[in-house]
Structures are given as C-alpha cells and as structure tokens.
Amino acid sequence: MSDKLGKSSNTVIQSDTSKTHVISSLLWKFLERGGTQGVQFVIQIVLARILCPDDYGILAILMAFIALANVFVQSGFNTSLIQKKDADETDFSSVFWLSLFVSLLLYIVLFFASPFIARFYKNDILIPVLRVLSLTLFFGALNSVQSAMVSRTMQFRKFFFSSMGGVVGSGIVGIILACNGFGVWALVAQQLANNFLISVILWITVKWRPKFVFSLEKVKGLFSFGWKLLCSGLLDTGYRQIYNLVIGRVFTSSDLGIFSRGEQFPQVIATNLDGSIQSVMLPTLSSHNDSAEAVKQITRRSISTSSYVLMPCMLGMAAIAKNLVLVLLTEKWIPCVPFLQLACLAFALYPIHTANLTAINAMGRSDVFLKVEVIKKIIGIAVLVVTVPFGLFAMAVGRVFSGIICTFVNAHPNKKILDYSYIEQIRDILPYVLAAAAMSLLVYFVGFIPLPAVAVLFIQIAAGIFFYVLVSKIFRLEAFNYLVQTLREFRRK
Image (cartoon, rainbow, N blue to C red; front, side, top):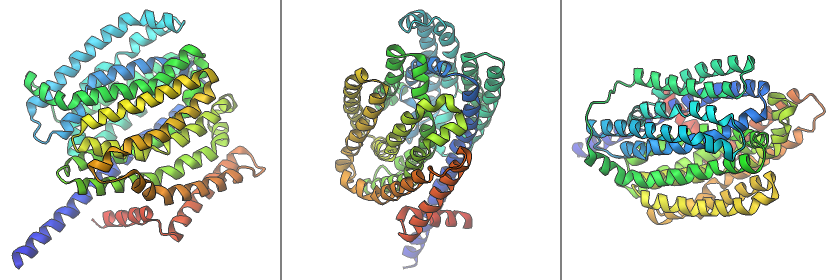
C-alpha cells in the first residue's frame, strides 16, 4: 500500500514539476516574443513615420526570396533535432556544417540571380540590396543548432536575451540611418544587424560548439523526417510570399508597402501570442507522443487558450484599425486600414491552424503534414489566381476565405490521429469567439465618440479589455479560469 502511495506521490510531483517547467518556458517565450515584438513594434512605428511605402515594398519583394532560401538552410533539420529523442553530438555537428554549406550555395545563387530579379521587377536598386540582404543567410546557418538546442531543452530565456539584444541594437541602427536619409538601406541594415546580434548572443549563451565531424548516415536519418518538413516549409513560405511577389510585379512597390503594412500589426500580435504557445507545445507534445490521448488533451488546451487570448486581440484590432493607423503611423498610411482589418480576421484563425499542425508534427506524422500543406496551397493559389484581376482588396478578402477553408483541412487529420474532430474544436473555441465578437462591436461603436483620435483610441482599448474580462468572469469562461489558476500556482512555486 505504501509503495503505491509512494509511486502516486512521485507521479504527482513529476506532473507538477513538468507543469511548472512548461509554464516557466511559456512565460519566457512570451517575454521573448512579447518583449522583442513590443520593442520591434515601437521601432517599426518610428521607421514607418520616417520612411515611405515604396521603401517597405522593395524590402518585401526581396525578403520573399530570403525567406524561401532560409527554408533550404534549415531544411527541416531544426524540427528533426527537437523531435529526435536520442540526438547526439554527431547529429548536431552534421546539421551545423550542412546548413553552413547550403547557405553559401544559396548566397551564390542569389548573388548572380539578382540582375534577373531586378529586370523582372523593373527596379535596378534590387541588385545591390539583394546581394547585401542575402548575407543574413549565413547568420541563420550559424545559429540554427543553438536555436534547436534551446527549444529542445526549453531554455527559452536564452531566446529572450538574444532576441531582445538583436531588436534593440538593430532598431538603433535602422532609425539612425533612416533619419539620415538612407531610405530602404536603413531597413536592410536593420535586418543584418538583427541577425548578426542574435547569432553572437546565442553563441555566447549556448555552450555548444560544432565539432569537425560529419556523418552522412546521421543526416540521412534526420532528413528522412525532415524532408517532408522541408517540402512543407517551401510550400508554406512560398505561398505566404507569393502575394508579395505577385503584388510587386502586377502593382507598384508602394501598393505592396501598403498591403504588407496592413498585415504587420495583426501578424505581430498573432505570432507573438499563438507562436509562443506553439513553440512550447512542440517539445511538450513530442515528449508525450506515445500517448494519443495525452497529445489530444494538450492540443485541446492549446487551441482553447490561444483562442481565448488571440480572438479579442484580432477582432478588437479590426475595430480600432482607423484610429490605430492615424495615431501611430500618420495619415499617409490610411490606405492600409482595410487590409489591416481583413488580416485581423485571417490571423484570428491561427490557433486552429498551428495547434493542429504542431500536434501532427509531434506525433511524427510529417507525411500527413506534407499532404495537408499541399492541399492548402492548391486552395490558396486557386483563390489568388481568381482574385488578382479584381485588385488588392479582392486578394485580401480571398486570403480570409481560403484561411477559413484551411482550418478544416488542418484539423481533419487529427480526427483520426487524436480522435479530435473539427466540430469538437469549434465547440471548444465558440465561447471565446462570441465574447470577442461582442467586445469588438462595443469597441467599434465607441470609436464614434467626438474626441481626438488619441483619446478615442485609449477609450476603445480600455473599454474592450474591461468588457472582455467582465464577460469572462460572468460566464466563467474555462480558458480564463485556467489561466488565472495556472498563474496562481506558478506564483506559489
């Protein structure tokens, strides 16, 4: 009897310790994303007030090529290293040297391809800008293994220090150059400085150094899992960047600057909140991937918690969009308001997308992950082809429409893998959708108060927060109670 009690007690202690570790990791991830994105948010506001939409449009075109190249640099090996429970020194070193070699090859390709890209977009400045901006590929390769080790051991405070250092240092560089009339080069210098500082800080804080070893067998083993993620990453990144590439070619770089600026605010919030949760969920789910029921419960918690936090942020931002742009970016950016509002609707669906995909990865089903990505991209490209002739606004509406369809595509495999159906998922998030929708309506009508835009914006935000918390308490929303209880437990530890 005492043995059973002892085992039970140990299980409880281990469970509490595991929960505390996950919460601690999640808080550090929130600090990393929240702190750095908060600083980045301020820096981007300052830069946007100085620079023009055309500068941002040029950067958006070239960052599409950099983003695609970075997928090859990572090659799915980062996730493979996190997912592989018995990864050793040879695994890590082999991935490091391979990533560095791939980054060199890709830099050479982009260097010589830059004149053709500039000719296609009819803008000669793209040649030198792309050749300099492509240097960021080397920094991604240098810190790829350090990043995997931090995620694997859930030591997210190291990400906090590296990200914060990178954002602050690069922000200072960008603002100084922008104030001195360097235009798009200020944005390029900011990107380079950010990647450089992140790499330096990670190399200082993560006590891992590559050894001069390389195992083709190890690489093949990791690639057997990672190649599907590589293909998925190419599909996903290519799809996300194709809008920038098409808009930059069919419309003007200024139009692209307006379109991408409209996405920036909701994207910052969504990637910060939902991305923090999913970054912690992958290693957590991977450690439980021998139990589908355990993974289902964690995934369910992830979708509910992310939706509770993200829905009011997105729908609330859509309601305050005009005043937000007027106050923060000035009137020259007013054309981005409708794109901001539509982007908010698209990003509000993020929890369903990311939680389901994270669960599929954690269960080692990268084959399913790839199939899902292929289907979604076919849908997305079809919508893009149909909407391009009707203009930018139609393209933005089409992205929301395809996003709604793709929530079902992402969720469908987990009906079989986890016995977690789409209907169950909708049922789990419905209370938060309704509460957030009611809050956004209130906030929208508050916006008609005849006061200066700054005052109205402040009242809208305060009213939205108060209303949402009040509704959460009155209706005892489960995610709200869970967050409050979890924070209380964490404070007692």
